[in-house]
Each structure stands twice: as C-alpha cells, then as structure tokens.
Image 1 (cartoon, rainbow, N blue to C red):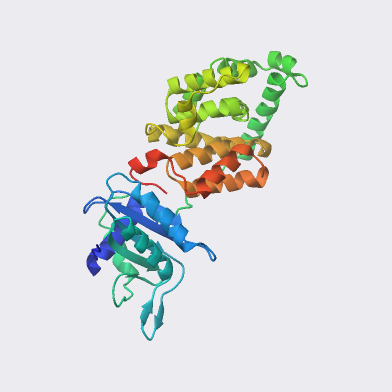
Image 2 (cartoon, one colour):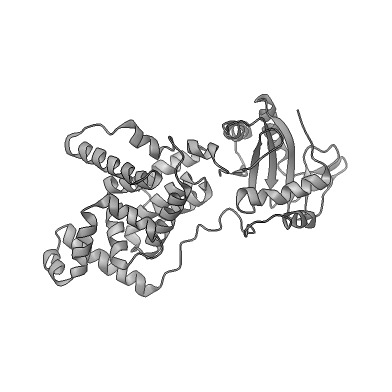
Length: 372
C-alpha cells in the first residue's frame, strides 16, 4: 500500500508543496490528498506539542484527508526546526513516532501512502526509507524554480498582519465613530451634530439599506472613506448586522437580505431563523465565491487597522471567520489572538476558537484546492 518516490522525484515533490499550500510551511505537518497519481491541494496542521495524544492527533489528521472527495492516497511532509540525529542504527528523523501513528491510521482508513518526507533546517529525508539519508535543501529550491508561482517563501503566518495605517487616518475614523455613535445611539449632541455635519446624514443614508451598503464594501475594500469605515464598524458591533454581513459575503446580496429579514423577525417576535442561515456560519452549503470572501477579508483587515482599539474585536472576529472559510486557520487563529488581547470574553470569538480548536473546517474546504 506504499509507493515511495525516487530521490529525485521526492526533491521535486517537496519543491511543489509550497505552491500547493500557498506558502512554505514551518513547524507543520502537511498532508496531500491524492486521487490516483494526482494531487492539487495541501492541508496543514501544527506539529503536535509535548503531551499531545498522538493517536488522537493522527486520527484527526487522517479524518480530514479522508473527507476530500475521491481521495485514495496521501503523502505527508513534516517541516520541523529540529535536526535529525545520527545513531549507531542509522539516522533518526524528528517526529518519527507521530509519523508512525499517522501512517498507521492512513492504512487503516484504506489510504495508500505515497511517501512520508521530513524537511529539517539542514536537509530532507524520507521516513519510509529503510536507511534514510539527509538530502541537500538546494535540491528542493532547484525543483521549485521550475514552477510558475508567486512568492511562497513566507510561512503560514505571513499575510495575517494588519495593514499599517497613518495615525491621522485612524484619528479621522475615531472622530467619525464618536460622532456617528452619538447620532445613532442618542447620546450627547447627536441630533445637533447631524445638522452641523452633512456627512453624518450620508451615513444614515447608507444604513437605510444595510445589505446594499455591505455589498458596496466589496467594491472598494481598501479604499473606504473614514465615515464609511465608521459606519461599517457600527454595524459590525451589532451581532444582528454582523451576522448579516458574514452570511451575505459568503453568499450574495439576496442571501444578505434573507438573513436580515430572518434576524429581524427573530429579534422582533421570536420567529426561528431558518436552518440554511445558520448552516452558512458553520461552513455548510454551496461553496462561496472566494473572490467575495477575499474582498470581504481585505475590508475587515482595513477596518480593524483603522478602528479605535475598543471597536476592533468585531472586524477582527469577522476576519477570523472569513479566513477560516478560505481555509486559512492559522490566520484565523492570529486574528482571534488579537481579539483576546482586547476582549477575552468576546462571544463570537470564543465560538470560533472552539470550532478551530476542534479541527473543524467548512465543508466546502474539502471541495476546494487547499485547506489549512
């Protein structure tokens, strides 16, 4: 049930993995589901920590791979900062015990094992070779040079940092947020401010049709003016409207309208929200348009970077959900860490942490090119 790649093939294969994943993994277990002799995606897991139940870890990893439609084989690559250790009996590769558990689970699941490779700081090798030897990392770089690809030199954390925003822009968004909250929440001189500042009237116009506003955000996710950003933040701080935004960006304008109607009916009279609305949040249903998700994620990152600190949990949490929906669980985890630093009890963030911590991925991730 095992097909071991030749040495040259293994080096070329390792050169392809970053392209499939979209980054160069670090401290990771990467699983590549095969259909026959073809693979076009990669799943990444953090390496197990000390004290991790390796049997449960292996079961979860193989369970994820087995969910990918048509999978009949798997290849595994371990990326580690640890070095291989030479002994009297030969070279001992890091995480060998975990790999034995994982390959055993794969075979129990009826999956053919294509190969199991290890990349260390000083070389690469195969767990399956009877007498493993360390190959040069330059073999991997030469093979990857043959592939047309973007920059994949960064690891799985690259791209999760928030954009750098000019302090003056942050102050403009902060002032707009204060004025808008005063107007909409009935505090302070809100009504007088609306007459004195016509821009606030424009914000009220945006809020007359919230789904249309959310749709307009996708058209210019990186270029919202301060008042539009403040209006977006005001919406996201209200769970009803935040849930509409998530559902709409994962579906379409009509989906946002349906969700708003359902959420409003529930809030007004307790009418149960249809199952299909909640299913979207859990990652079930038709595969979303990834361009919509990416545009929405860009808008959330920009909004969080511009927002006053107390207003950041909402856009950061939505950014975490969008990252999860795109298969970027490491990025989602980073955004949730940022939320925890501000508000450790933010409810939606806690729910997402439970989902991600349980290795839950959206169903559509198993139909897409790659999942993390």
